[in-house]
Amino acid sequence: MIQKMKKLSLLVHANDRSQVLEDLQRLGVVHVEFGKDQQRLEILVFKEKITKLEKTHQFLTTLAASEKTVFHQETYPDDLDVLYDEIEKMRVEVDDLRSQGVHLAKELESQNVWGFYDAQKAEALNAAGIKLRFGKAPAKLFEALDPQEPFVEVAKDGSSVLYVYLQDSKKESAELPGQEIFLSAGSDQLQQKLLDIDAEIKKREKFLLGYCRYIDGLSDGIADLKDRLSYSFANYSLTETAGGQVLILQGWYPEVEEARVREFLDSSRAAYLLEEPKGEEQPPIALKNGRLARLFEPITKVYSLPNYHEIDTTAFLAPFFALFVGLCLADVGYGTLMLAVTIPAFFLLKGEGRRLAGLGIVLSVMTIAGGLLLGDIFGIETFKEGVPNQLYPSLLRPLALFPTMADAMALPILLGFVQVFLGHILRMVNGFRRDGVQGGLKPIGTALLVITVGFLLLEYNFFGPFAKVMVGPIPVGPLVSSIPYVSTVTIVLGVLGAVLVLLFNGVEHHLKFYIRPAMGLWELYEFISQILGDILSYLRLFALGLAGGLLAESFNSIGIMVLGNGHNPLMWVFLIVVLLIGHGINLGLALIASFVHPVRLTFVEFYKAIGFKGGGVSYSPFQTQLKSNNH
Image (cartoon, helix red, strand yellow):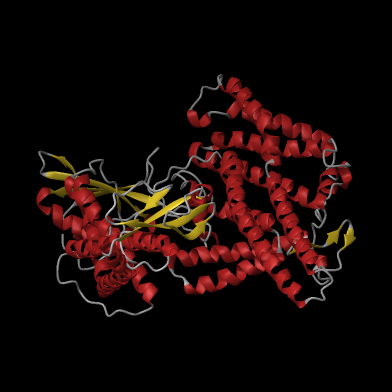
């Protein structure tokens, strides 16, 4: 749900400006409506400093973690900008040295084909009258050379020959066949340079490790800069009036914090006005959900926060999203592996990481549930070609409520009808809240039309004989066919739904009553042309589950082929390798798809049915991150 907000308007005398802002920041519950003047030099400088120091903090934190050492923390004696400059300079030097090392290593590797090259001995030979020249030529060209010439083959490199030409130092140098190669230094010299570079890198890395004792100081410095940035935003958001003597500041606070806000205001020298949100005003959004639904808030935020006048969709999308992921993966084995990863992560991680791990646990459990309902464990299905699979555990067989292909295909369609219908009901609630009774009548009409479409599909045997349609153990056909005069009920629901759409569309846009039927015809056309596509879109859940199951079964078959008759112990090792790699690839692909497609169904089909507008701004109170904060 969305927390209720109240609007605060402050009137501050210019002389009290700093004191009121500092007190308001310490209160830490008011979301200030920052002005558009956010490109001032002071603000830009703060942003640049924060970015630089966060980069340095991340580097030192990673460095400290790699050493697995606890560093005694100290306060940096100088300005943090100096610390950033020192570390950045050292990092640039290390990167430059590493680049030189890579270049020298490549040069040494290319030189090794000549054996150990001693530059001093080559110079001695040159002084004695023999100059060593190195070259590379195609094999055919080298073989065609005059054998009397002092060419010495050193090695073959594919279709080329590496050679040394022994030239008389006193004679003028002639062009060598192929490509002449120049060795800049001896192998021992290159190796020594590499050792020297490595020593310099280690020396600088040791210096960088020393800076890890300032990590906590950096954190405090960043927090202080963020406080000062927030203060600057608020300061420049004050609107001057009465010749600059009176300043106005507006913001929002959660209704549950009203006692604290009033206590602050009563002790402040500022005049104030507290109001309920009016008309189309859009207060910031603070979500407040139960422990389980809260895990799905990151999914809600992927698309957009709802605006203040909408229902928070988190609690409604959560069960569907979890179930959709479970149906996409639908494998007891994969779910168990996911659980083995997410449970330790939940206890090891903190903050947002722990919340995501909690979401991972829920989705892992739903993957196991999906595997049990559809009957699949690492690609081993309940039935194989219509016959019970002896490899599937008999204890779990009664839990496979949707084991056949027809059941697995019908379940997503049923879920699609339920979710789209729920979307129109939520749209009705939004309409009632925003525009009164008339605002909720059109969504009631579309909800009735969704039921009508479902009934018509059943009555016209779209899913088989009407009265016998079963979705696993769910008697959909018998339940609907047991409704007295079901055909008449279907017609009545359809006509009533169409009338409501024709007469009450456009209420939110304040359309004239006589214009609504014309607009309603377009609404009906859109509904009729899209509803089947929307519902059938849920078949992607079946398709993904089927694809994952078939891939898992294929890897199992490959493993069995590799194993052969099982007499060779080495083949068992290969079997394990094939299964690990195959199921690892399948699980990785399935995880990606099982996130993307449930998100797509949520944000397209479900949100379209709700009429979701979004665009909400997250509640971000004007507060201090560092207690001792001086502006």
